[in-house]
Image 1 (tube, rainbow, N blue to C red):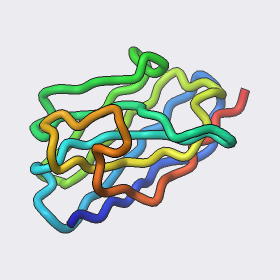
Image 2: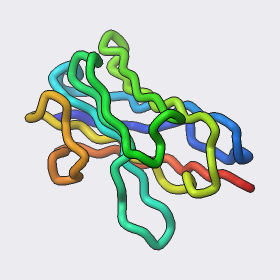
Image 3: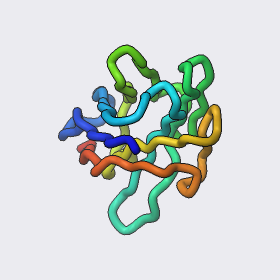
Length: 125
């Protein structure tokens, strides 16, 4: 089992930047593909980005492609989400998740066995 704790959320103006972190503890971090998801008020949770166990492969939702970058440091048991050029529609609770089965994880929530508690990101216009 792995425990995940997100941090780095906050209030930022449109066109600003934030970097989210997700620290893992428990089982060997490098065994897990990692994903970021978000949930806006009144909406379902949606896929944002994923990264393979080694960090060599990444994938993004179309809505964030070119603005967000997912990365990981297996020596620090941490995955990051660098968010640039933020828009009000990026507002939501951001969750990291760990997938023990697929090398690159998935864009589907049910592929992930472990989830953090979430961190709030609010982008003002």
